[in-house]
Length: 396
Image 1 (cartoon, rainbow, N blue to C red):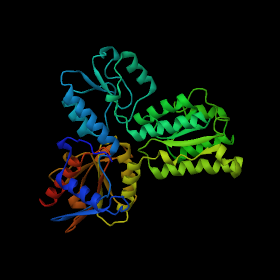
Image 2 (spheres, rainbow, N blue to C red):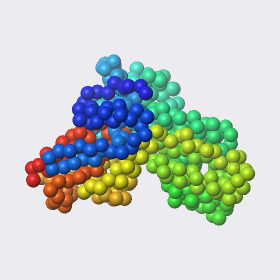
Image 3 (cartoon, helix red, strand yellow):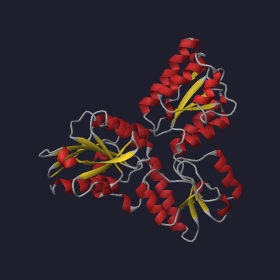
Image 4 (tube, rainbow, N blue to C red):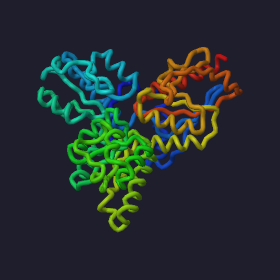
């Protein structure tokens, strides 16, 4: 696999050494057992896989090369390059400007951007509509496109599904940049619909066998279906793809649900005509990080810490997994850990930041902490969180 040039500020000696050691011992990545890091007063149980994935490293390398090569140009990103505040804040400080926010709201008018400027496409990709705007302005270039190859793989699979008249069911969050981009590309090739989870998948299935009136579809799935969608005729032949950062187990569950629905309605002998096997669209890094997190859940510990951006979908799913067993603290960076033993952490359900005195709450002679981070989190940020926790524990 290609080795990328990552800025030194995102590297960390301790984390880097652990990654290299595990890689040399397990080049085929078959061992998902965690590593342990022991300090005075605390032991960390660290996931086998975590941090920058291939797509993120590819984007980081390209963006920083553009900054170095074109210091005199206006450089824009369509939106946040990845969902990590440390990286995005650094890019803003270096003069990059975001054209839109993460929801697609315009921050800079297209009228202010010229063909002399550089506009970078983030790792999530972008819609065909925005690609057309860039092309019309004469500023699109493959050199400035950091779309993750695994996102493009989903687009290519969607195109093949559409060519064979399968309706494309996208497992994703409709407001997320990647899902908006995938929906745009898939809608160009075939009928498309977005479902957020298994609950929405089961609701959608009630239109296949006409348990619900067709008019209800348009209100239930408003803004999530392609033009001209007919729920009574367009769901008789389906394939499932996903936003690459979703829970792989849930994508499998949704896909299998539709598979057996097709068998129930049309018979197993007609399955291949009604259902497309799309397991090949799942991102390897998402799979590896989630499998490694499941291995963490076999461990014992006082609590878990997940590090990453609060708007990072893949990181939220790691939190969802770990909180099934541990009290889990989701932190953005080391600044969220106060020197007075309090940890400021994000609740993914209430969408609010809370404060917990973890020293008083877990008053053990030695703490055992389960820890990992998202695919857009730099090693340096994880390293700083570990160092800060060790410092606070040893101040008690």
